[in-house]
Image 1: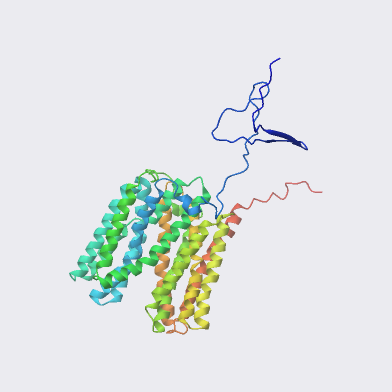
Image 2: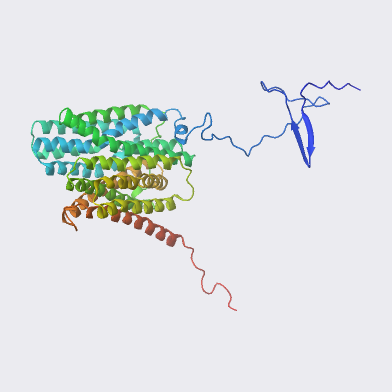
Length: 476
């Protein structure tokens, strides 16, 4: 009979507790090796791996990562994001740069505002077609020539203003800038392509992109005003065009993360997709919140003898939105996005009442600042959830077009909200004080909530099962 091998030091300790066999192995594990042999030379059964426990990074522990750090572990994401930020920063510069340049040359804010409004209208018409071409032929093939054409329009505007060309040339030149692609939409499309199997990470990515938008529209006007007043009136438009062109060129070179072009597709337009039209109506009402809030805040500050403070206070509103967007992206959201969207709209309606109540009750510009900071904290979560719904409801192969339509709705709402807010400031109750104008953002937010709630009711009616016939059961 063969002699069993001698036991090694630190051999496994076996014991039994109730109906469970417990094995404790104190042998140092330096490198993987063959399984230990039993008394008869066969491999000893190893305990099955624990497949129910996942290793997670806890906050505060070495090596812990935030959701935002985890986003950029994918190769190429940091590069296309940085290029997208560079390309998007001028989007917050162009309008104020054009107003300062034209008003300074022609001494007419009315002409400057009309030119900018024409450009917004042209963007609303052209941008969806540009986005459709991006979906069909790819981001790099379309974005670069479209941006180059927009840059030529900016150069033409500078030339016409500098050489005192007829007014109609200003309208034509600025309208040519409408071909600029929606870089934010293209960036979100890349995230949707890379994270299509990870909804939680996609939620974080959408929140990050919304925070970037808020940051660009917060810093853009400040940079534009500094350039136009410090260097020369055309500096904001010129440098903004150069930054946009450079950013899009670098963005287009990041081919590894670019979604594949769809070519010609037979899928229907996002405008005819279920759930998209009412969602665009919500974007329109939400844009009216932003447009009216900007006008009435500036008018309120001007009525109190501090017109320059209006821009600073609006910057606080954008800062609150940016911070809330980043915090919202770090949360693990649950439940249907439609329900979260209604809650976000309800929160926005409630918080937008704070500036109105503050202005009416106190008339203080100083107290208006924190109320606008709080009011801004509902806008980014609302926009993040709305963009998620757009991504979900847009037909396959038309994602850039769907998101650009959302931006178009926002632009239309901003234009309408600005006009309505200005009219209420001048002709509404208590005209001259600017307090009544703060009711416009509240009404616009409530309208957005009403549209979203009506869509929910319509959806319930559409999916309600048919009632059985009255004679389907035998009578007793």
